[in-house]
Amino acid sequence: MGERARTAFAIMSGTTDAQKSAALIAAAAQLRASQKSILAANVQDMNQGRKNGLSDAMLDRLMIDEGRLDAIASAVEQVAKLDDPVGAVIDRNQRPNGLIMERVRVPLGVIGIIYESRPNVTADAAALGLRSGNAVILRGGSEAIESNRAIHKAMVAGVVEAGLPEDAIQLVQTTDRGAVGAMLKASGLIDIIIPRGGKSLVARVQEEARVPVLAHLDGICHTYIGKAADQDKAIAIAVNAKMRRTGVCGAMETLLIDQDYPAPGPLLRALLDEGCEVRGDDAIMELDPRTVSAETEDWNTEYLAPIVSARMVSGIDEALTHIAEHGSHHTDVVVTEDEAVANQFIQRADSAIVMWNASSQFADGGEFGLGAEIGISTGRLHARGPVALEGLTTYKWVVRGTGQIRP
Image (cartoon, rainbow, N blue to C red):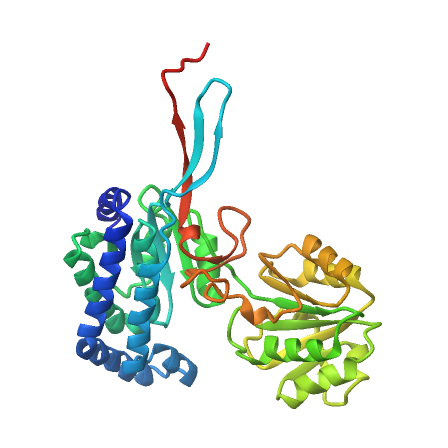
């Protein structure tokens, strides 16, 4: 598969914007035309999932109905309409000897994508990979194998119809976990691995991979309420950051409140009244009898549930120290009307995404105007934050001369 992907990539790297866009429009049409077979395949996965005791939440992630399939096809069409990053000149300068130096965006190469549960990722990942001129090898979770096969078949039909190589989008057909290990060791065939799934999957990938990995392990996101925070904003932001969707990686997991903030009680009450469990330090517990004591591990926990850890801090320095010790470099927020404090937080917080007076739930490629995203990266190299089309490219230097030789 890796060898076929490299052959396909050699073709994909030379395709035009119009060809890639047309292939995705055709793929979306094939998804809609294949509705009956895709939904039938999903029924097989759902029935098997119930037999295997999958939770209601897992079954909901797995389920495809007519509305969700239409949304999957629409997402592919949206990717087709995005600006093509390939060929864009990042910067250009002319040397005194007349040489013109340019950095130009090019595809990454062959991308291995390992994911769980959600069959829509098959279409999203394939679309983003193809739009950015890459070849992709997809390895979905065993619980969605039939759905993934049906979606992949439809996507490939559209790609071939548009005249692009079918091996530009490949799906690992086996559910054997050994296939994951083989991908992680495929140095020279796969250029980068992107895992999307639970903590155990991402941890395995990061531990075993012999090729570069683009991923985040935890989303331990903080919201720091400064002493100059607007009280209405503080409540609205904190409640939304935790409770809008508790299971996303951008959900707030720890609330830090400045000891000089004048209204911590109403802030905690708002969270508790929304059904959020608050695990706090001694100062927090004195503010509301419904709070419970935080244990040491709470500060390092991504709950993905209606639970938040909360503590009082003496100021921005202590807030940033706590974030540095317990955060995961994902998304951290400061709520304050003091611009100097906000700018200090923005400069010093070592996170892929830093926000001022906004909910951490905005940590999403769509909300950043990037279209679909392949994931959030908390690493330091190549790409950080929401990774979309541009994040699936690298660059090369192009030097244009008129016969210059070096003395």
